[in-house]
Length: 204
Image (cartoon, rainbow, N blue to C red; front, side):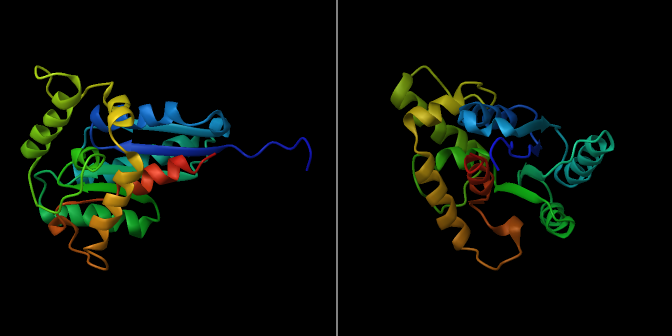
């Protein structure tokens, strides 16, 4: 109907990390076209471990709805890191059971960054992720610069020198290797960050 405004939608993204993940998603949020003004996207970095993060995310959602803010989509973002396998698997299963979305990475969020530049299937640790990202940075910005986890400009670096569409395809390819498996803690490397990125990109 002419003159009718689209309803406002509220996305709440709750992250395990207090800076790295929130900084990335804040960058993406600012990068969305003006047409997404009818979407409220709130990013909260809590610094909790995997299991308690899911419970805290539920409380954050309930707290907002208590004051009349209807949360249309709740996303929980976390890494495998060194958490026990059972905790990581339980966090993902809880999200599924409670009907909200999770974007997880095994082993770390930096896997999503690396997939902007290359595809690989080797199970490597966080330290190797950081070294590989440092190599990407030095290739473009000089030999004296190293990857810093809480770099507020890293989203822009990815957009300038990486390829987000390639990252999405690489993440899908990795995810397909573990299709129908529920041993999430053993799925290394793997990430579902692309699902959240695609959801945000589709908001126009």
